[in-house]
Image (spheres, rainbow over the protein chains, first blue to last red):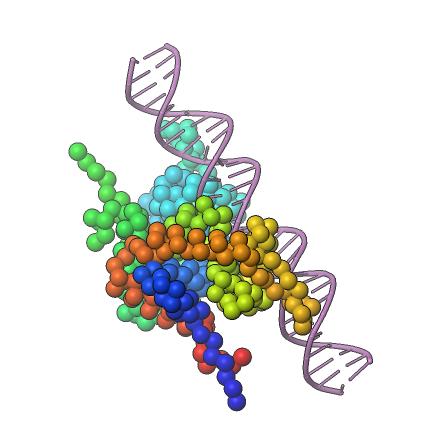
Length: 172
Length: 172
DNA sequence: GTCCAATAGTTGGATGTCCTAGTATCCAGT
DNA sequence: ACTGGATACTAGGACATCCAACTATTGGAC
């Protein structure tokens, strides 16, 4: 009985990097490539849970930002800033959320250039139901040990901080 | 003189999760969200470096797989399996690489369903130049400490393993 | 007061990913 | 052989992201 043991493709690539004389970059390559693949795995799990709720992760994030805001309203620009995405991505997400009746566009009273987004009751309901499912099906069992979860958060916070995601002084 | 120090949005969300009684899922949420954002940062850095070479990261990965293969050729199916992407994504990447003259489609001698992809001399040249730039500009300085790089690789390998990325117990 | 640079949002285009469906081909069981 | 189920790839569609360009509006400089 013969078993072919599939090797980890990333560990393979890292080995090749070292063999090619790129030892100095091998770990970085492995880290970045792992990040790509881990993202792919995580997003797939999340999207699968969100699908029945009729939202994607991008829209879910917008919804939760509004859900947790004081008045249930936020300017487009602020949403983009918080989520660190391009303005056009916000437009896209809001368009679809609005069509689904989960949010509403409101004219900014003091600045006619700006647009305020308001979450609707249906939006709140979806946010709560989706979060409940995500918490039980994904976030509570992320697929790695508790200590790894902590380390991962710490390391990625370091990475994000160095990339200018937030003021390093506030990194905690 | 007042400076507004932007807080880490993810640390914020984690706090809210705990306040809402979702403490058990708070870390998982923070880990997954951090992963999404870290991916966004990494892919942006990588794509910026690859852009002058006329390839994207998706195509670069295909190119490197071929570059390191014994004969410079691989079946489409194997490429998709190694990169863990959908067959249509491979078709897409190969289409563009072929148009750019970096790879070539060849008929599989023994199986008329299959297609073999062969890297061209230009493909090899691009692979080498792009790798050189990536190594010096990204992989050698990933934006986190060396020990963090090691921990990150270890944790993401754990995550990928649990997701079945390289289930060693599986027969083929 | 006027003018111009900066800001907010949208539109259109390029790219990547996945899914569903369809075509061609292979292979094993009867 | 034959037939039906797998396998390999492609076509078309939905989404998300970014960039470049455009419109509308704001606010400061002169």
